[in-house]
Amino acid sequence: MRDSQVPINMSAFGTKLNNAAWRSKPSWAVIATEDKAFDQAMLLHLAHRIGAKVTTVSASHALFMTQPK
Image 1 (cartoon, rainbow, N blue to C red):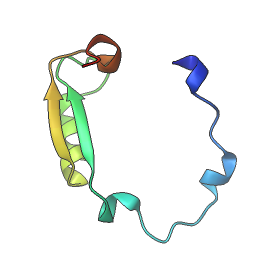
Image 2 (image 1 turned 180 degrees about the horizontal axis):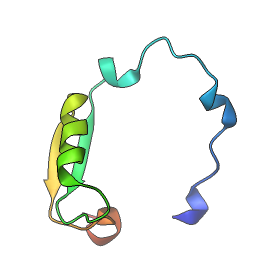
Image 3 (image 1 turned 120 degrees about the vertical axis):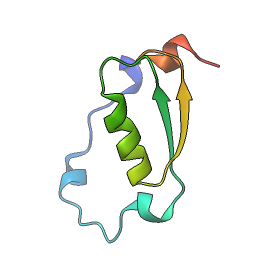
Image 4 (image 1 turned 180 degrees about the vertical axis):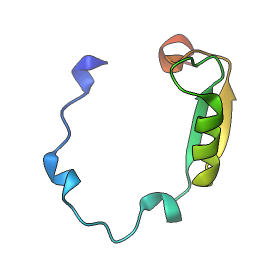
């Protein structure tokens, strides 16, 4: 995973946005129910706030590593 991540381009912090993509594009949230790194209520609140279709998975924070299918 480390090899696929690169530093963010600093111009991303100074670019003015005309609109936020999440306001007009479909959003999804995959929430791991056994995640101890983030509060579940907070994750659900944020997902519902952007109108995301929520899928819950019985997995830990590293769900894409432990539940690849």
